[in-house]
Image (cartoon, rainbow, N blue to C red; front, side, top):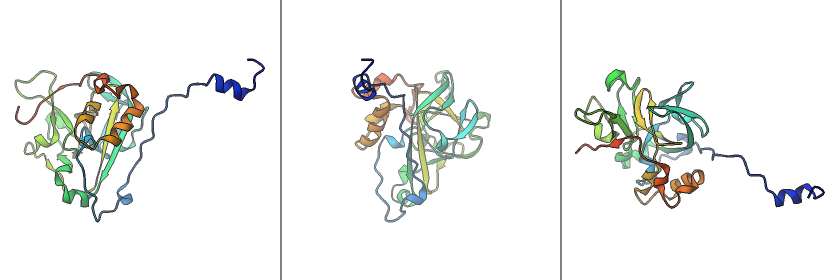
Length: 230
C-alpha cells in the first residue's frame, strides 16, 4: 500500500470528516414580502424560541440570540456551559401576524419577575417555556408557556410587528438566561407536535441522526411543565 497513489489510498481509507454543523440560514425582514402575507402554519418552530434580539448569557457575557452559531457555548442553570448544536430561525412579518395573531410574540416587560428579570423588554414565542416558582410547587420550579403568563405582571401579546424567532438546541435540554429571565432551550421532543415539522425535523436529524427512530434518546427535559389550568 505504501506505493499506491494517494488518491487510491484515500478511496480505500477515507479520512473521516471533521464534525460540522449546518450554518443557520438568516432570514431578514427585507427578504420577505409583507403582502400578500403567506399563511402561517403551526409547528415546532413556535416552541422554545426567543426573539433574535434577546441577549443570551454565555461564558463571555450576553450575546444576542440571533448571533449565536453552532459550536459556541451558553450558560445554563445547573448544567454549566453547554455547547450549541443547532440554531433555528424563523422570520415572521407583521403582515403575516395580522392574519395569524396567535403566532405573535409575547412581550415580557422589564422587571416583570423577581430580581428584576428580564433586564429589558423581552419577546418570546407563545410556546416558549419560562421557568417560574409557583407557591407550593417543586423547589426546582416548573416551565410555563409564555402565552399562559399573559395577564400577569404586565405580560401581554406584543404588537403585530416583524419578529425573528431563534431556537437553540444544546447538548442537553437546559434552562438558559434570556436578558436574565430563565427560559428553556429547544427539546427535539417538540417535533412530534403538529403536521408541519418535516423541514425542522430534517435539520435536527442532520445534527443528531440517532434520534430518527426515538426522539427520547436526546434525554429528559430540564424541568417539569405546568399549564395555566394546573
